[in-house]
Length: 152
Image (cartoon, rainbow, N blue to C red; front, side, top):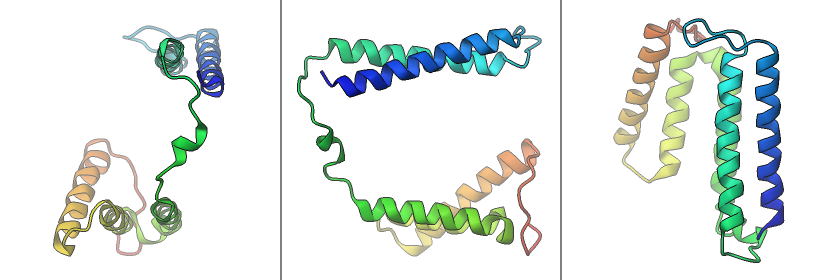
């Protein structure tokens, strides 16, 4: 059994208990009238259940002597670095160029990394993604996104 993994799972279990206790301290309220700790409490419960499931699964697991290096074997580091760089550039350009243009560019880059498709398929996929997210967040939920230099 991988002892490091068990300690990690137990750590998240302790964090979930802490979240639930703090949420109860600041009043969770009811489903009809949620208090300030409502979301925190139920997030702690969900985290605790997931952590507990992992502790039990790992305890019952038959595999012995797993090696941490197996976890990183076969990782394509160039793709990881490309995605992280893309997200960093996205965060820098978002306030300047706005949500629509910057997100479109990010989606083209990320969809291009997933698979080598034709450019028009990448563009349409990115356009549909931006359109759907814009309608959900900006129109329906009325979230204010950066407008950018073109006003959209």
